[in-house]
Length: 126
Image (cartoon, one colour):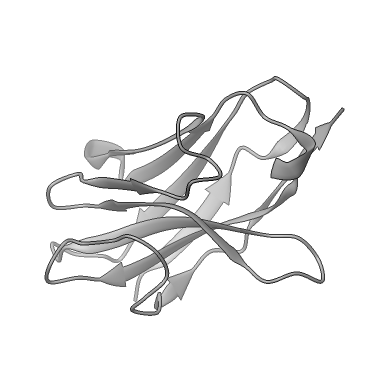
C-alpha cells in the first residue's frame, strides 16, 4: 500500500516561492506516475504536474509551465514541487498522488490515480 504525506504548504505573497514535499512509502520498485494536483473548495480538482519515477520524465499543465518544477529525490523517497512566481490563482489545497504505469507517460489525469495524500494548503496573497 502506497502512502503519501505532503508538507511545505503555507502562506506567501504574490511573486514568492514555496516548495512542496511528498514523502512516499510502500511503493516498492514499480514504475509510478507521481503527480501533483490542486483543488479550490467548490471547484474541480486540477492536475498540475507529474513525473515518471523510472526515467524521471516530467509533465506540466499549461497554467504552471515555466513556473513550477517537479522533481524526485530517490534516496529520500520524496517528491517535490518547486513553485515560483506564485499568484493568487495558485491558492488551493495541493495533493500528491501516485499510480502505477507501464508506459511512463504521465501527462494528465488518465488513467486514474490510485493513491492520494491528505493535502497541504497553499495560500497566495496579492
